[in-house]
Image (cartoon, rainbow, N blue to C red):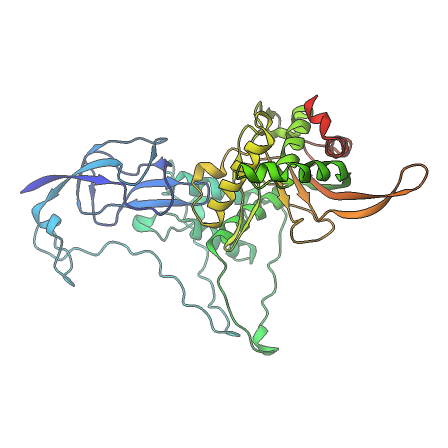
Length: 436
């Protein structure tokens, strides 16, 4: 006897309001337990939602582009009484004729970790069979976009997911084999052959230990690598005299403390950057995918890099140009705390038009930050130091702040880059300019 059961979104961690990017099933389709019925994508990763039980899809209550959270209704499945109860432990599923049905394809097992000095197994050969003409390879939109960014031809990639579904790991493995000379190079490589790094047996030189990268570092590393390879970076260095600004900040620190606000230098810097971005909108823009148009943004949303125990996160503060210093300080405190506690929502890290990365609390004199694509510029800030500055008659002690502006040279040329940093240093040296 068949019964109708609801399928709701299970617990997916701290994420909510996550976008649906693919629904691989349709009404009338029969699904098995753990078959993917939905694909979600946050700003950090995509994830498949599996079927909690076997049955026939009757009604789908959502569509591609919808945003869902834990507990939201996704679809209705018609479940047979036997399927609802589930097969007995260890017993293979049977077909309608009573014959043992072949098990569902399992994802490729993850290789066991190698001991120090142990050579990796030889990679499997690059599959040469192409997908049938007119048939698209079985992959989610997120994987297709990932393959386009790396220049991989999905018709040459063998999927290891259920029903031959191509996963991001399959695309990465294909690229690695292609770079090693075992297959056709990526289509978008443009003839540039990047040789792989030589493998080194570090255990020959002494004791070693292998530690896995955090999930955040693995995900952000791939994003930074794409940005570095696709964007021609130039970095402009400058210094801002923030002596008067720092005196002003200290004078209002007690007032801020009374309002429960930690008044740091960052809100002042954000307001100065917002004013400079409004004056030079090309720095607040993005390059269109065709490379022939510039998308100018009428809003100023600034991402601020936050150092967390698991890696770097960049929450975004919206409409910086419309908020006061105390409001920015309060919002910055809230988002920084959420970042360190691992409670940032996907929306908290999306929509930025410019990024600030400050290492002043740690040290350093200058650095070259990587542009956070699809933005076209990022500002690096190092530790301010007291320096003697010539005023025309004598040297005066002034608090100087090092600035490092990295930018996409396809959008911003050298003259525009130095004009932006010059404008920013003027704004920081005299905060009264922010009122103009």
